[in-house]
Image (cartoon, rainbow, N blue to C red; front, top):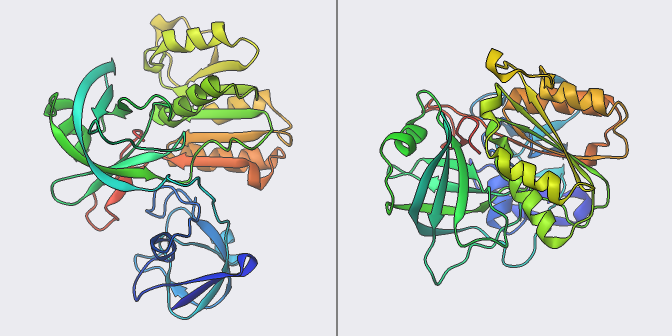
Length: 349
């Protein structure tokens, strides 16, 4: 099948049963995408002409109203005819291309009761160029994959850092917490994803994390500090209790070193009595909307569980955030063998 991108005067071939996104990426055309499992909505675009099918039924990341508007999720859509579509094309710097490589476990450190920081070392002769905010696939022995966001910035790549939350019933996170050992050899592929810091933009930034959705935002912030990016950033971080706000000393240091650049608002959904908490509580996206009732001048980067991201997107748009000024990454988990093998496991990234 031939897939044409209306506004770009570009086209590509899509094989029988192949997802439109996969076909585009295979031929060097980068569309926006995130989970690649139909949940995050990051690959959404418009169908101008032609017919397609979702083999596994309507994906969870698209609403009925969006379908009525002619929208589709191209990570799941398989063409039945030649098609004309409208979708954003993402230009990435030369050299930022996914590749497979071995990596060795350097350290596994507990950050909280259910979150660890995993550091991997890749071969000395190799580098993994990536954009702040992108993720890496861990390739399991049976071919399944688990995706985790890079928590370190691109310039500090001696180790690849990940912040991994233990997911009850999660096959891979159980392995990380209970069985993985230093010096173990694993295979990874990356960098992946189109959730990354847009360095050529000028708007002030709101960042919002849910749980370990902090990982890619940390990568972005450390990159901004290192490059002298002077856009102001207000970071909101939603967690259950105070103990779940990990690496607090690092955040305190950011606030002391860059007092005119960064603000920080933690938001707790279930603060413990011992927390003596006087800060924001409830849903983190509601703390954002209370603070910024008019979001028309801002740009938003948000990362975390799908319900948080979906609710926030609707709320922020209602308060004036332009559609092209919101970038999101959803962390999802499923052990259902009928679902795609590439998923973000729990709030892990």
